Image (cartoon, rainbow, N blue to C red):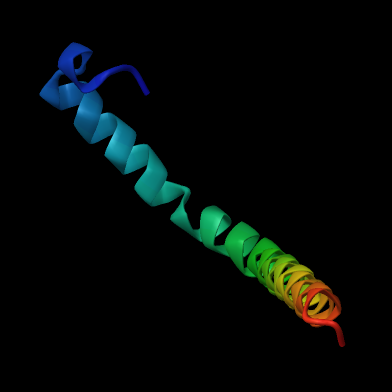
Amino acid sequence: MPPLKQVNAGQLIAYIDRWWDLRRNLQARLEKTVPEIQARARRTNEIALQILQDHRTRREVEAGRAAGG
């Protein structure tokens, strides 16, 4: 899609109409791919939390050593 400044009303309507006609295909693709993307996002979140917990544990251990523990 070109910049909005370069689009006239007829082109915009045609573009919207085309995507409206393709909406079922898009919906089917999203239904197929979104669960995998969500699972990967959850895994990324789990990894980030684990990194933060490991970092926190390391800092606590180092603080304990510095305090003579």
